[in-house]
Image (cartoon, rainbow, N blue to C red; front, side):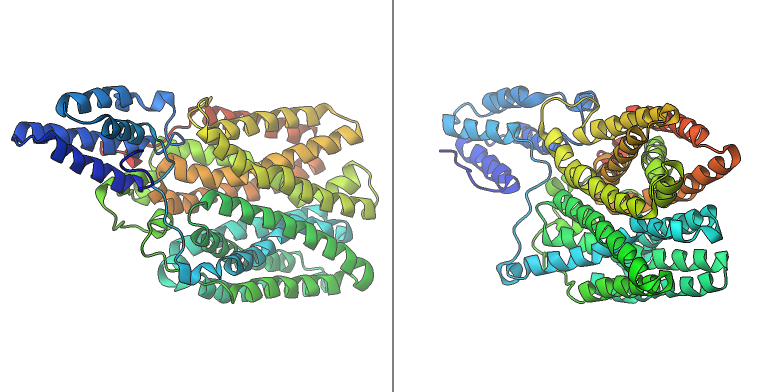
Length: 528
């Protein structure tokens, strides 16, 4: 049985080092230095092989010593080590955990774990409204299709700006996610202004109400996601996937609710009910958000800290902290920005114009179009948002990675499929095939949203993930402004969607090239 079986890897390494000192019986300074160098090298190796998700085969040229070389060094330095101890050393060097293992939640708060997770899910579900707003489009034709599409794109853009505001201000100066949610949730009541906009045919007021509502949803969404990651400290990727999935389920529920309310109560009442529902979800769920005491673990440092208090061997697994300027000036961030822009842009365009596409381009009756909006949201959740994180994690653990990591490989694959789907959409005239291609693109959109969050951590080190994710949201905000307005503009200009699909395909090609060039930022993982 291994001498260090069951110990966390940090303690296991220290125990083995102490055993080497005792069993070796070497007192000379030179040999002491050799042992120190051996285990210092072991620590450095662990920090980069924690995972395989951080570096592919081509990225590890500086760390090609390998466990065989270290094993032989250990043998030559301590000739009288017993077989069991050497086996333990080899085991430590061969293991490649993703990050240092996180201790479980304190027993005193464990009972409330799933209540807190459920509260986060309730808050996150309010984010589904941005994908359900196109249900109003067939009923607001008198304002113009461009007006409604612009209002929805402003909602999405303001949502991302709200997330940035949360990461750059609220997270630093507000105590806990509960306060953040309760402070920003009243902004969703601005959706009530849209009823006045419809009565007075004021397009600018409709756009303003949607923008303010989006800015209220963004901080609540991000607060709930981070809160959920704290309550699932061993599975932050799973927490993100759960959050994205509940956002998708919320879009299905709200799209259904909007259609039912329009049929029974009319357009004005449906907007009022939607506004009150959003506020109820955010304020009601926000009341139950409470951070656990994880002072004994490194989850807080992993997600939001700027100055880790951990020892150097654990901190090396989190990477080197960088300033926003260092991140933005890097070519790696520029490539990531462009690839994120092209990954979600076509999906934003579809969600903002979905109701109009179904009724105008595909000739569906209003009720059938409304049902398809609901179904498309459900498909994007089940086949896009929910499995993307799990597939990427499993791919990361495998021994074959096409482009450095499973996340990068899947991101590139999504770009290629999206490019093919857009190109096919330009020439397809069959309604059913067009509908299939639409569902493929929205599934890719859902998966890319999950991967962008994962890649922020993988490419720029975990300690910089929160900062990078806030910065990369400028890319998704820009795509939310460009693509949803570009689609109706070119449709109005040319009378068809052919030119939009060709242009979007070319833009997606640029994104695919950027995906091929994506690699971790070296400065974030080692001192240059």
